[in-house]
Amino acid sequence: MAHDHHPHDHSHDHEQGHEDVAPAWKHDGVRVIPGNQLDGNVPSTPGMDRKAAINFARVGAQKLWAGTVTIHPDAKTGAHHHGPLESVIYVVKGRARMRWGEHLEFTAEAGPGDFIYVPPYVPHQEINASPTEVLECVLCRSDGQAVAVNLDIEPVEKPQTVLWVDPTHPTGGV
Image (tube, rainbow, N blue to C red; front, side, top):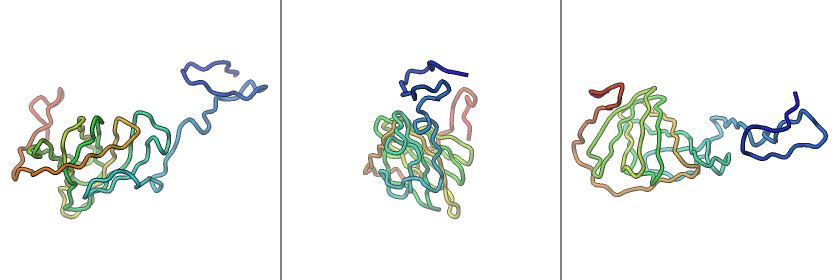
């Protein structure tokens, strides 16, 4: 079946004389990034091992950054924020304890299968809540460039636990 035009707003060069030639999506289309080929050369936060899978430098991503985060048992990151970017953390393995606020005064925990949302500019800290198991997460951000602003914060001694409240958990979930 011949395609003379495509319903998207990218322009692509077509080889002349071939009716069934697809757009130049062979190298500009879907990309698979093998898990053992992630890029560890990204802005870091003490206590955390970040690796990029999807970003501007690797695949030309304009509006997304995605990668992995590993935190060793009993370890925690320094306080930081990600500027104007939104972040989503998906917990693959282990137990994540998040602290956030001007003095990291709020806390909540997440386990495998849970998603964590971090709004722009929110000071936060990721903590591996397990003394024995590595915390492994997938991280996505709302821009193709990585931003990590490390902060010098004096945390409160006992943070306040905050339950997740949303339309499906109006009284708070754990």
